[in-house]
Structures are given as structure tokens and as C-alpha cells.
Amino acid sequence: MTEQYMHRVIHLAEFGSGFVNPGPLVGAVLVKEQNIIGEGYLKTYGAENAEIVAIRSAKGETYGAELYLNMEPSLDKGGMELILKAGIKKINVGIINPKFQGENLSVLRGKGIEIELGLLKEKCEELNEIYIHFITKGTPFVFTKWAMTLDGKLATRTGDSKWISSEESLNFVHKLRQRVASILVGENTVKIDNPMLTTRLRVDKISNPLRVIVSKYGNIPDDSNVLSVDKNTKTLIISSKHISEDRESYFLNRKVDVLKLEEKNGHIDFKDIVRSLGERGIDSLYIEGGSSILGSAFDSGVVNVVYAAVSPKIVGGKSAITTVGGRGIEKMRDAIVLKKVTHRIVGNDVIFKGYV
Ligand SMILES: NC(=O)c1ccc[n+]([C@@H]2O[C@H](COP(=O)([O-])OP(=O)(O)OC[C@H]3O[C@@H](n4cnc5c(N)ncnc54)[C@H](OP(=O)(O)O)[C@@H]3O)[C@@H](O)[C@H]2O)c1
Image (tube, rainbow, N blue to C red; front, side, top):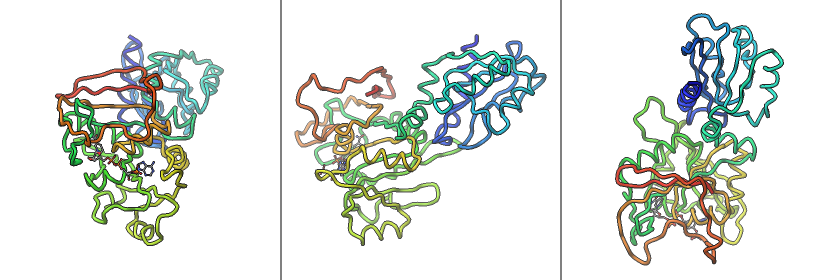
């Protein structure tokens, strides 16, 4: 029964996905005599805490009620006073908040509130994997997602990749775009596909990630879709320090930001990319491709999660690019073996998920 309330908490917390970054996804449910009497979630970064929303929404007497939260509360914005005033008897918490390390739970215990920690712990950790990674490491949590044919190709020999996967899988891409703070592709992908890299979902509110383009000298066409920016759709070019002044000014005049990083052996090190994005408060990065960029990201060891959509298509061609380029490894024993691997069938495709 108690798990059912925590499932509801997680469901509510997910409504904040894409809007609370770099904060945590938090949901709250208030229960009395086995009835849910109040609910809430964190809507945007810095908005009213989930527990405050839940207590304020309560219908009827809150005295003696139990509060369910997926994460240790922050207790600011009057949250602590409200919990005490409402007469909450017990708080069931999924996980501690790495920012407070359990200190806020101790404070609440000290005020006579019973605390039970660990309900649906793994689910609560997965819900906030972005936040936990960002708070503890200071760099974005890195997702990769690619669509590949059954024979391991990212595109045909002419570079055509529209579309490898089914419409249902494409929808999955847009859900991931909605969730993350930034999305990254390489220069060739911009030249060949001219993607918009925006979120296209049939939902009430859309969140577009910051579009990050790795292009050493800014050699992308002037009519690239990613160069059209507005207040909700921004772009950052990550270039070498040797980009020409002309090209840099061109981008800046179009309100496209430029981040110049050191070149090492002809490439920009992905470790420097994630460090710089983290310094800008970007908690999550979705690397969409292409092959060379994915290879470079794996070579630098920055990837945390892989989503691979495998489509039952065969395109052949020795020169058709494979999914992960880069340097790669020499021996099979050194292969990255993904952990906690799951898969699901989406349309005609199988989408694998695994942690690096
Ligand atoms: N199926 C899918 O899910 C999917 C997704 C995206 C793209 N695609 C397809 O992938 C193809 C493009 O892939 P691609 O491998 O040719 O191009 P890409 O990865 O988009 O871009 C490659 C360019 O980026 C440079 N680069 C790579 N890593 C770098 C780094 N760390 N620092 C600086 N520059 C770096 C490469 O330089 P070097 O040559 O020196 O390495 C090359 O100039 C297109 O056909 C597109 O349709 C498919």
C-alpha cells in the first residue's frame, strides 16, 4: 500500500521533467486514513517546494497525516514551519538529497516527526539520476541515443539517415530532448541532416534543450536550422581557440553563443566540454551523434547512459558509417560492457538502455 503512494509521488515528480533543471524532480503526496488528501510537485527551478504545494492543497484536516516524498526536502521557503504547523506525523522518504546529506531529515526527527527512509529507493534514484550526478560531480549527466540498422549502421553510404527508426522511436527522442538541459551534435550532422534539435511533443508545455554544436572552426552553413535562435531556443557553438574572429563575430551577431576550448591532437576533449557545460549550470547532456562525435565522447569516457534503437533494416555498404567511430579499442576484453541493461519494443524497433 505504501509503495503505491510512492509510485504516485514519482509520477507527479515527472511532470517537472525539463523544467526543474538543475534542481531535483520532487513529488509529494499527503495521506490520511489511507486516503490521498493532498498532492504536489516541483514545477520549475526555484518554484514552491512539492511538500508545500501538497500541504496547501490538502482537503480536510492534516493533523496526524503522513507525507510521502521521493527525496529529502529542502525545508526552505517556509516548508519546515508548514510541516510542523500541519501536524504531519510521519514522512516516508525515498532517498536523501546529496546536497543535504540527510541533515534535514535529522532536523525533522529532532522535531518529533517519524522518518522512514528507503521506500522504492532504486526508482527514486533513477528518477533523479541527472540531479544526483550533477550535485556530486559538477558535470552534466551524459545520455547518448542513436538509431541503428540491424547491420550496425548510423546512415547509408551517402549519409542518409532519415529515418532509420519508427515514428514511435522518434517520439522517444523528443521525450529525451524534453528531459535534458542540452543536446549535442557534430558538424557533419548539421551539414548533412540540418536538424532543428528542438522538442516536438504533443504536450502543454515544451522545454527545448540548449543546442550544442561541436565545430572547430564554425564550418557550418549559414542557413543551418540550429543558427535560428529565439528566447526559448538557444545555440552554443563549441569551437577551437583558433576559430577565426570573423566567424566568431558572425555567430555572436546572430545571438549564437561561442565557447572556445583548447584543441588536443586535432580534437576538443569531451572532458573539457562537460566540465565547461557544468560550470554553466547545465546538468544534463544528450549526445545525438554522429559517429565521429559519439566515438570521441566514448574515447573520453564521459558517457553515462546509452539508448540504442535497433531497427530491423539492413543497408550494407563498407563505407556506411557505424554507430560509434573514434579511436575505439584493440582487444574485445577491453570493451565497455553496459550494466543494468533493459530493452523494450517500440514500434518496429528494440530500444536498449544500459549504463556505462
Ligand atoms: N542514426 C542516428 O541516430 C544518427 C544521429 C546523428 C547523426 N546521424 C548521421 O551521422 C552522419 C554524420 O556523422 P559523422 O561521424 O560523419 O559526423 P559528426 O560526428 O556529426 O561530425 C563529425 C565532425 O566532427 C568532428 N569531431 C568529432 N569529434 C570531435 C571533437 N571531439 N572535437 C572537435 N571536432 C570533432 C570530426 O572531426 P574528425 O573528422 O577530425 O574526427 C568531423 O569533422 C550523418 O549521415 C547523419 O545523418 C545519424
